[in-house]
Length: 319
Image (cartoon, rainbow, N blue to C red; front, side):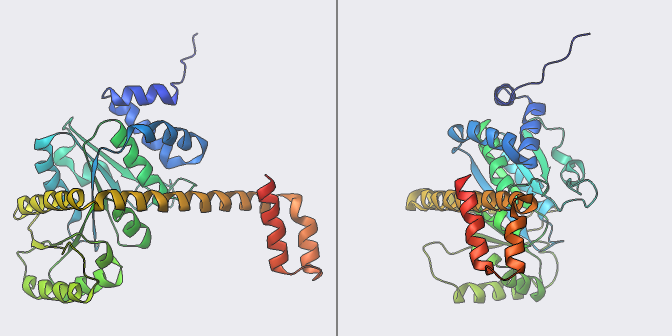
């Protein structure tokens, strides 16, 4: 009985670039799990990436982000293939994404030109804050010109992920509460476009005024985030949203801001990788028996915690 040979990472990447979605899914799963295999994927795709336009969609839970994303994907699809990374909370039992791809965007599930993937924080190195940019790089490297990141919540990690896109769309609903939540969650700082979704409800104009007032208090820049009203369930206003995404892209390219943002993101990613790698190595050393003597010295007050930390860092640098 012959044993089937496991495909190498290079072979998976080649098949994914040839359009095999199963191979692409395996590459992203590898990125999610973290560790050396994920780093190998990163090394292979990095030289091939850099051409995709990324759009982040985030906002308060229940704002209709998935419906809006689905409607926007329908428009982008007319221009070419598009990939969606749906950033979900992790299941406490399996570690996987709780919300399913089919449930979230079933209208596009059978479209071969749309790739939809839910991601969860189950990797070891940096969680979503590092896995998501790596997954975007994979999608970019295999040839997707448009990548949309949609987050479920507005926690710090979700804000970081959505803010890692070229253009970030913040979605709120009519009502003062959402505007306050947007301000508190730090979304004002990352928003390039505001969308008041479910605009068939009361309170649209008051929410618009709230957002305008908060924008007036923010630091001025060459780009003033537009505030749009949509009803994603019917498609109302989604064409206008797409027009603003394209206009923002033109601004980024014409002003040089796109290159600046991408450079800043790479710098931030490098910082996170270094910090997380040191953290992993320190944890491994901490769990080992090598530090038993140092702990005894610490308990006997022969060294203080800062001196003990310096010794640990010294061992890490030797490694």
